[in-house]
Length: 247
Image (cartoon, rainbow, N blue to C red; front, side, top):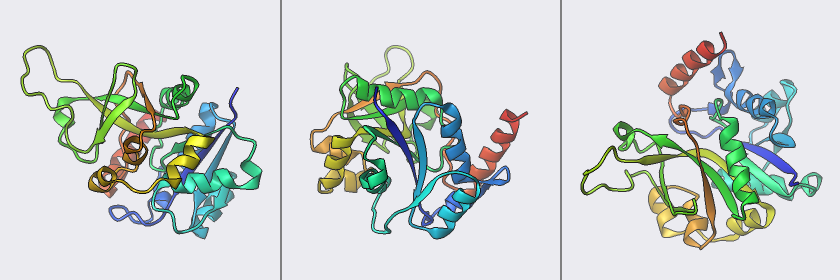
């Protein structure tokens, strides 16, 4: 059985929601809400928050959770995960889970699904949730299409696939969920690859391994994705949902 380390990358430099990891969700920093959520789901062997900001590391540790300092040179979350994976104390782990620090409602099905794609032989695993057609134009909701084996063909902020004609039923769209699982070799290969044109065009890091021929298996979920948190309005909606679910 694989030993899995979950890394939650946390940076303060969000342009739309400054200091996002430390914004409060129902009285607790968002990043610690995410860390507790993943810990409580009891799927991985260990959960670590990784940040280049001492104030984030201090707040996480003060909450009784595990945090490590990483460099400030990373361009995306996967590079930060790779640094954590390279640390001597983490050499005993076979696979790594990257959960974005703004996913306090991440589901057990998404995490198990992403890890399950590694068990099925894919280099990288992730998850996708059904997306209603009314949200297909939302660029913040990344869409994914995949082949008959469940491997990603493309990720885009645009509405894919394009339905030229709608003869039967409703169009089907899938929203990418913010979780990745990697084998150690796949993680090391990903971060060693040069950036690619489509990655830079879409501003989607997962297009880099895809363009270089790596396999990304997609676990299909049955329920819509939980709301993301990119703006203060998103955070306010998330707080209302959190309080509702906590009753």
